[in-house]
Length: 68
Image 1 (cartoon, rainbow, N blue to C red):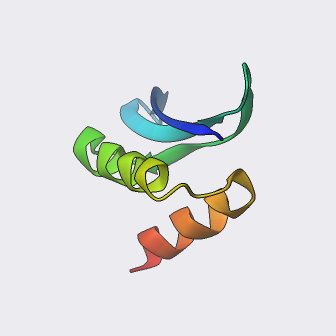
Image 2: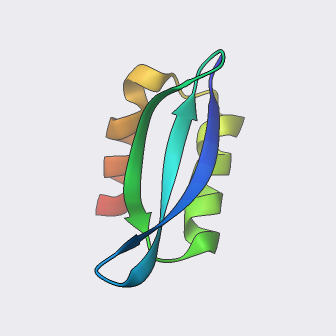
């Protein structure tokens, strides 16, 4: 099972939040620029975790979420 962790970075001088996919002991995937809101990114990460989304579907689920 994987864990979804919110990350924080900077893009064009502004804070940006992303989600990292953590496997056994290392990051196996991630998206650095999910949203500029910590709350929105945390809600999405919690959704991924609570629903047991497999790492292979991570990017598709995030893309669908952002397109809504």
